[in-house]
Image (cartoon, rainbow, N blue to C red; front, side, top):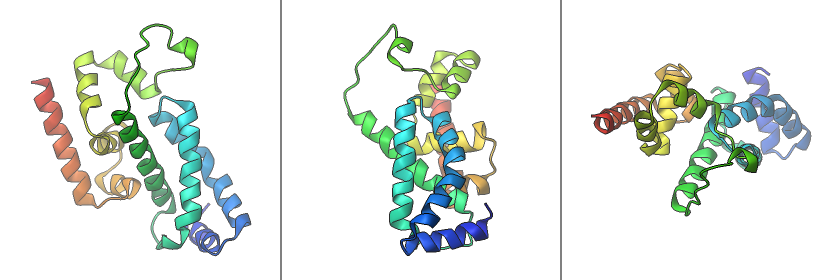
Length: 178
């Protein structure tokens, strides 16, 4: 779907047009679900985040300014929901299940599997200790290979914020690995 078509659809969604919302959902849900599954090891959580994202679109469509990349705007909403879920998980007590995770439906994300094969546990632990915001910037710029400008659109933050967060993330990783 073209950005101009998305702009029109979002204006109609803001006016309460359910058909426009359904069309917008059908156009964007597949790629958004795939991106969320890539970043979230729990498929149920990824599905929940997808639904929360589109619920937010329904509620805040009037706030969309238009002219920007609607996909970037949509992803910034989803990423915000993902970061919020990671923050909530960080303050909840964790139960440790050492063996049989696969038997209980828990599978590592594709990124975790790739990192496990490439890096040792020291690097993985250092990455996991980064805040969700810093990890998201590294994900976008390093793993996804996006430019600073593309990452800024994707994350819904200014380019300077992306650069600052990337610098902070690299510094924290360097300190953790020293």
